Length: 330
Image (cartoon, rainbow, N blue to C red; front, side, top):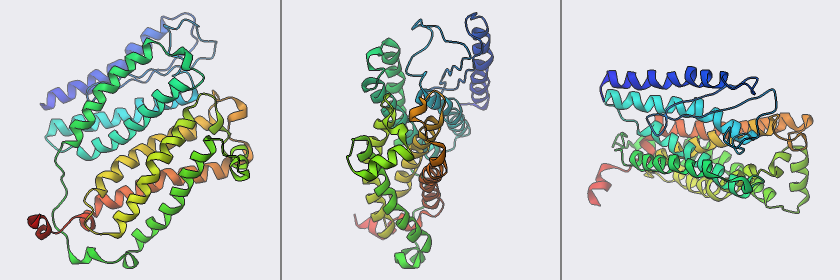
């Protein structure tokens, strides 16, 4: 792709904002509307986010009821801002002939988390009876994006193939990695605990946690329930595998795995935190004022630590690379 072509894609994506604004200004029944739109499947993604001061029209052609939930609003923000930026970065890398594997793997994690939770939540939640051809049309975007995921995984790795003796120290001589190992244990417990909460665990701890800190886990839209189950079934095993990768040298899959997981957790936690506090969430399911400091502290740390671990693995990957001699022997 030439530089002029990459510039053309960027300019074209920006045109969606004034076009959508003009389109919404022609709708007499809406007071205010704000739309985010961006690139889709590495070229153009158009996401519409509606916020009304007056009651929105009931015509199903006007909007998808799943997007009109608090969770739907948050994934629209994420798609229109964060995913949009990732698409532009990948387009720039393709234009300049650089590798886009790193930003692509981060997008893969974010996209897969968003897609799994949105599709399953829309199907089994209170809006499950309202599934229509709009959601089925969304599957076309999912299908093309899954193809893009495989395309990104096929990109060659840019990691160096050297492993120095200094990087083969035991965990006791690597204080930063020891700190991450200490973090992984409570992180594993936390994701399993919240999974048990949404499965209606009768434990007093689970009930008190739900009432005082995260009543949103019981929201009938089912998005938070699916979110926690995905976290328990996928993030849980990830934490165990990562413990092994931080203690045993030569686990070459660690940098890529942390990229995918950090992208997934960033999307999941942003959506969960904001939806828990959003006005479109019924008041009884929002985080109580007294529990907000603990809720924000725990969930923000839970979102940031994977990013820090990913940064460590990407900037100092020598510990995770096997010696050249071992590769030749194989």
